Length: 250
Image 1 (tube, rainbow, N blue to C red):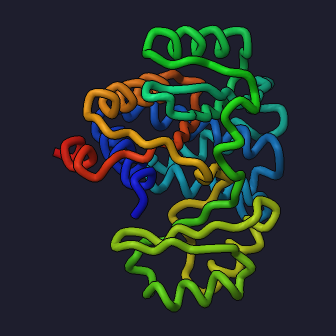
Image 2: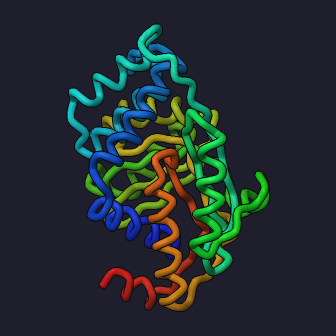
């Protein structure tokens, strides 16, 4: 597993332990509502909504919360207009970072994030300033227990995906963004619902992080970003040295 993936997993586990559940549910509900607004409020006919519901279930979001969020996105129920905005910049250690936000007030979100970058040792850049370090991809994940690596590899080729990375925890499948939902449909017919299905950023040019102090500052920076209500997802190109990963895990 790459250092970037290991770091991502560390942040996920730490976030699951430390983040207020109400805040996590709020972000998931916002994505469900926006997905319902941009298509039909029926997951069977709305791939984005179905993916949002899968993400909510993965975090054990109660069924009632999910249903309320879907209803809020139905025509005439809520007139709030949300914008999807991408911010780019550098985190501590000169690590490239992409922040994806979902906001009803751009004039609130941008200054908040600019201040956070500054206070936490980062630098916010212009759109496109770091995204060349990444590739926009469709991302699908299944637990490693779903099937063996060889079977999954054959399945993703038949489904039209580009690549799969299998380890002891997860099968991570990459495809072209436009093919995301057709690939998912093909894999679902064999393996059932995935645990993750979304557009994501795959690292092309990693940035090494070789000391514990920088790694800890980076973790704190990402946690602070995730604490902002408007931030939906944070992606970095950090490649943390194995010995530093062990200390972070400890």
